[in-house]
Image (cartoon, rainbow, N blue to C red):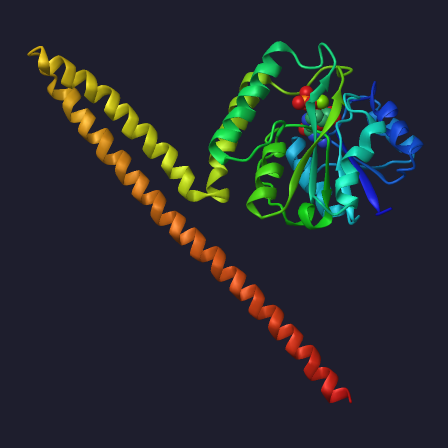
Length: 313
Ligand SMILES: Nc1nc2c(ncn2[C@@H]2O[C@H](COP(=O)(O)OP(=O)(O)O)[C@@H](O)[C@H]2O)c(=O)[nH]1
Ligand SMILES: [Mg+2]
């Protein structure tokens, strides 16, 4: 089996952390890394006593904690899991299986497959559905639980993703960075249970932040799309207002200001769309260029090696 590190971000999880670590130990996963956000309860003490490596994060937020932990870990595979007992350690092999078989670089546990009553609050369930729908709409990638806290990543992935946001946007960033960098992501069904203790997530505030992150990061995945949707929204609102102007014009009522607004919306919308085409073109040629450079670099490396071989003979 590959060398696996279990990464648990914690903030005041004394009631659950023991259960979570014990579950992984029982299955033979002894490399447990707890990154703590300065818990004021006994979380760190319990984790240390159970043999986990405990590090206090230097900054704030789950995102910052994970980014910091990624720098310190060096295992082949990292499994991220909440310290709140809502995910089952017994199911970890479902996440590892596709990586072992070499068919995925990043595996996400899909909580919608099987969730206990009360595991999601009503608002939480609704918010998750909306954000996942929004993600599929703008990215065109079929994923159903991008915000899951149970996932496995290969070293290639966790050493290459760029995480910039401090808080609960981290799952979105992990997902988008993975697909933007061309790694393979896969969802597997898991069980989601009611968490012990209170959540640190503020459903509305964090929900909006996550929504903004999903759209904002579209630039990294496909800059063209990022502009097309904005342009399309402008053109559509122009057409909507325009139809009203024309409809009233037939009844001999003229809306001058609305007519001007219509023209502005449609023209600026079209401009944004053209801008999207240009950035798509630039993005694509950039990707091509980088690929070519990488290939040339590899070629040079190979050449250097054979050259050295000749000299040694
Ligand atoms: N290190 C660290 N962990 C955090 C922080 N905020 C939340 N966590 C932990 O991250 C995990 C997910 O947070 P949780 O409150 O369960 O969010 P939810 O699963 O979306 O309800 C839990 O294990 C928390 O204890 C933080 O600021 N720093
Ligand atoms: Mg949780």
